[in-house]
Image (tube, rainbow, N blue to C red; front, top):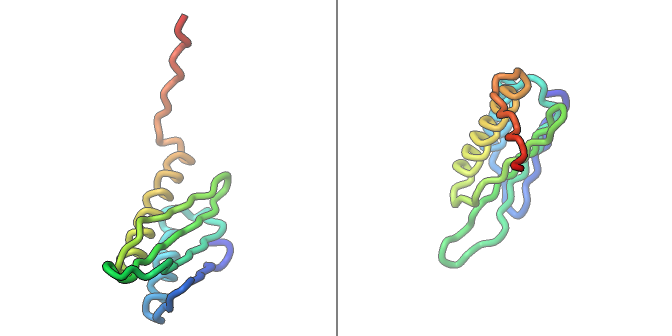
Length: 115
């Protein structure tokens, strides 16, 4: 990663263990694509529901050459699970990006226009 991880938290607190886990997972993304320019992670707890309790949203913005990859997952009641699912989705998007850059993805030729 060319620039350091930007981690922001809204309306909730982050334990040291979870912050370290986020930093480690962000660092591991370099395995799948070594051209990551920046990584921004936002963890938020938008509101507290009376029936369901707190839910946590995790949003990851990855900047790579030519594209910005954005990962936003459905809210989850457990912050660790929300972080894990978001980074798993980010990993899949980075792997797809790397395949496209290497030319491993087949592209269909455009169908001729109907006459």
